[in-house]
Image (cartoon, rainbow, N blue to C red; front, side):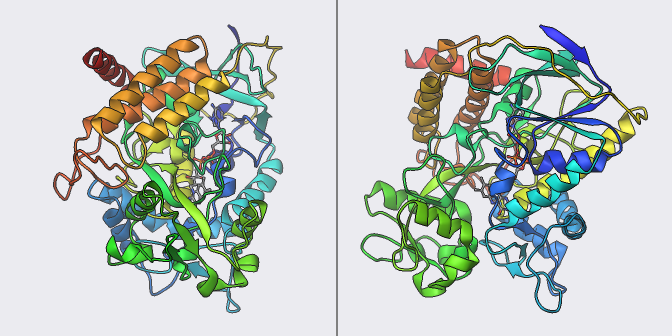
Amino acid sequence: MQELATERVVIVGAGLGALYAALRLSPRPVLVISPEALGTGASSAWAQGGVAAAMDPADSAEAHAADTVRAGAGTVDADVARAVAAEARAHVLDLTDLGTCFDRADDGAYVMSREAAHSFARVVRVKGDQAGAEIMRALIAEVRRTPSIQVLDGVIATGLAVHAGGVQGVEVSLSRPGGSVPCLIRCPAVLLAGGGSGGLFAQTTNPSRIRGQVIGLAARAGAVIADAEFVQFHPTAIATGADPAPLATEALRGAGATLINADGVRFMAAWHPDGELAPRDIVARAIYAETQAGRRPMLDTRAALGQRILGEYPAVAGACQAAGIDPVRDPIPVAAAAHYHMGGIASDARGRASLDRLWVCGEAASTGLHGANRLASNGLLEALVYARRCALDIEAALAPCALAPAVTLPDLAPQASPDPHLVARLRRAMTDGVGVVRTAAGLHQALGIIASVESAQADCAELRNMTATATLIAAAALLREESRGGHYRADFPDMDGATGSRSHMTLAQAMTLRARTALETT
Ligand SMILES: Cc1cc2nc3c(=O)[nH]c(=O)nc-3n(C[C@H](O)[C@H](O)[C@H](O)COP(=O)(O)OP(=O)(O)OC[C@H]3O[C@@H](n4cnc5c(N)ncnc54)[C@H](O)[C@@H]3O)c2cc1C
């Protein structure tokens, strides 16, 4: 493998976590590894609702932390929730200083949306559903003005080089179709900010790049993965058959939109006293049950918003229009889709992973904030808080460095990228066996398919990164013999106690379970 060395900190990914950390590390030289052109391929740019933060004087960080703990179904680390909620306001002000145009009232106060399981209207927003796009626009502009940040686009990380428990560098390949052989970039520190794994599922709201590859490459290098089984399924992905499925933000239900089925029945009252604003996992299971029963669940915005949906929620209105749906006249067909991974690379309060010289932030991390069920709009907030903490800790851990030459990759020979048929098989297996409703039999079957997909193209690192994460999610789901938050087992439908413990697993442990499962089922 060809290799080169740099004094730059290498940041894997180019979403909110990566760019915010790169700015916070400035003027230390960094190299941002971005598979696509900046601003595309990241969930961050697709975020609709906004950032949860107690900005209203009548609200409080304590109440925000309490809601976070309650939503997480007994596995949130309460200290983490308190600390993150306490920092939220400062990050919203910081994003504002960086040029993000949040919606403001005439008196300058932030306009706040109400989202499910929040006890207060607490989500700062941009034009109804444009928060992610606007935040990323502002950050990208700032990144382009910052000379210490080098962005290498068209490049994907495929592995980590590890020696004696410490990360030495990142293996990268060209992300173009057809791929390339990898090249090792040796560097003083690596920050993983490669997003979650929703795209590992056939039904998802995540961009197609977000398929658990960065969690998988860390796991393959030996990093501990936490809470892998906790995947959040969003109840209102717009069901048009598009892949990925466009999202109808939860803020619509906060604004009064209702859920009905093909018979015109509002079914949520039978599931939870909060109806449409019940915790996300419960709404997702209700939607899934209606879909399975053939009753075609729909989001009805007509009475609550009427024509206003066109101007106030342009992303949702645009997605409907593209699918030939007129939300002013007709309800919007919806389905539950993989949306957010609460689990990820285990990290501590400073953003450190279990390997030396490895930090992680954003959805790729598992910090203990979300427990078994993320509170709406805590995802962007977590990315902001931990990006800053990683930057502070990396700065403290490394010797000063003011200047470093730009990195230029050598010519890299082509090498096969993942076979699309194998990826499709993997994603189908995840939705069918590791989706909204899980059973031991379904998880066994999924683990078998994951193993056969992996062995069909064993020399492809990108595919192995995906199958590693898929294995961890399915194995952890098999071991958790209870239902909790986003993890629902039809064969263990009850929660095993009001509080539960988080799961921690290495890939080696998950692979052992996978092999044992294969032996049991043959
Ligand atoms: C449709 C949608 C709506 C959402 N709405 C909200 C919301 O309103 N509020 C909220 O708090 N959260 C929301 N979320 C969740 C939130 O957007 C994400 O959790 C958050 O943006 C994650 O930020 P990140 O920087 O960790 O990852 P991302 O923004 O996903 O960025 C990951 C980056 O890593 C790159 N990458 C992937 N693989 C590799 C690789 N192998 N090598 C190098 N780079 C790689 C990607 O190209 C991308 O640049 C939403 C998510 C979706 C999908």
